[in-house]
Length: 220
Image 1 (tube, one colour):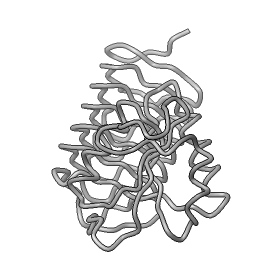
Image 2 (cartoon, one colour):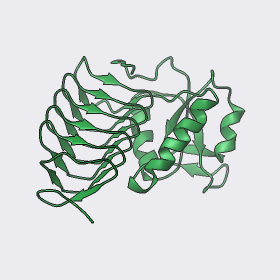
Image 3 (cartoon, one colour):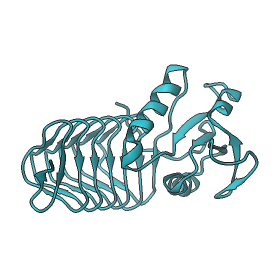
Image 4 (cartoon, one colour):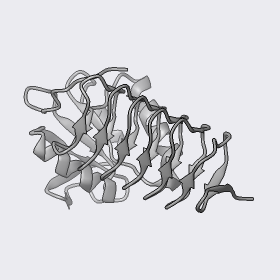
């Protein structure tokens, strides 16, 4: 994992945003505050030349190849539970052909100096991340999430707005933690599991499970 406390875009390669939905808008706002240069947005669902939140639609994903990998960085603008697998696939597709993904961190986030952040991490407004935490590649730490000390968060994870992780929580790859969910200390969430919105997790969750409720229980 890499870590960089200077998240300003000044002097960095310009960005291309992948996707033109709601999450992409949130990322663009953070990008502007970091002073990144942006080439434009790619989306198969929009017409080339159309304006999206102040930037031009360049075309579909194939337009990325118009820019050599050493001249731009990418931002994965896909979000939400239903397409976590697609987020992972997009990330891996472009990594395989040499592209890099920028770390996007909103200036209002509070991040301890020893936190380790993976490539392509996205940390939104009002987030707090405490010492000893490690977060993997291509993960979203969304608006006002609180991550306490010594948490280990895997690759391609989405912590939705307002989620809270107490100290020592481990979250496996490709997990979605829903809006407002809380996970108490020293709990493990197995890979590819889903924690429902508002859930209170007081027991560890196996892989490939859905848990909901207060306290959270496995859904059948």
